[in-house]
Image (cartoon, rainbow over the protein chains, first blue to last red):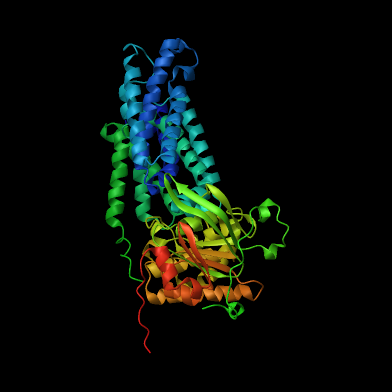
Length: 291
Length: 280
């Protein structure tokens, strides 16, 4: 079957649309994640999603919702998202109220949520059909995207676009210099919380598709590539989205042609693009001259 | 160097305001009589360390105040209280009679250059535009571009408009940050160690630019008030008409010829200052 024939297949179309939407949402976030040196946040919140899915799966089985006629209620995502929001708020609160650095706060959350996920998944009878397997959750299942998954991803991407459009200028200012922005009346603490909570929702929904293990790549690699090429943050934002979408489309096509896992192929394409950009980039900023 | 309107009789600081004064507590004084900076009993504590203790002073409008003191003495914290970035544990601070931080548009702030993130992709014109908008520009409109270029031109940096901040030297960055602070025509300019990391000639340009701005604003009324943290006693003596010495507590506040004499400074800094011999 040729690639053109394959595109006519509904599951591949859903995978393509889901991948593009996830590239847009994670790209918008990734700009701030990279510039704020929060690259570990993607891993932290993806593992929080894993913990949330474990708790959600256990709750669904224990309460009998696994037999519900409503697809969404059978899906642990409706518990994973609030749990991820809680984890994101916990990271934010630890950072703001203690002397702990971002990576320490994220590391604590990472460890606790993974432990919870492992514990609760172990309590579920192995033959229970939840519609999502542990392997798919860890490594992604973009080809297994259902119509209801696509709807959720579309809604979350729309949320990411709306929040970014509303807050981009102030969030960018706070990212450049927190103190300068606060001196101009920007509520940088509130914006940081908005960023963390939005990241939690986007990552929780995306991790089920692209995999917990590879989630951080979607946040970091396209933005890091754009950073090498862009002169302004606005350029970096636009370029991140374009590069993320391009890598997703190219990765899906390559995985089909080579018959290899889609999620990892997309990440490898992202990495190749990064390598080309890093090699082709003009020499970096000259050392500071003495004034 | 003091502006023409400031020379003449010894500059005495205004008496510290009585408790409860300040427009935010129902002050009926005309707006023009309110001090540019009013600190009353300001105490700031970070975890277990008291950084500022019972600091009280009034700075009249139009003055050039140099803030000096030992490292860790609370100079930057004092500036941050004035900006509304740090809330005092006790006491209060006001700018032109309003709560500190209430009107950021009246203040131009030049932070220490070492706090700036050099990896951030940005041009000098974008930085200046934040002074107009209070947020980062995704796109700069024509009117903003004209104002931004005029501000950069005023500080001799028009050619830097489209250059990346990461590629600017210390002196060029300082000009860009100064342009950003002045683009909104502030009544109060706050500078945190602006001479750090720049050589003598650039530092000399900085004082010229500040004096030029003060003269420009004096032509339409009261000159802008400047408050600058500095370690350069000679610059403070020559350019400022008031000096404030801070080492957690306010050690001295008054004209430089009174404040910057050896014994007062030794008391504040805890050691003697080397005095370079002046050629006959």
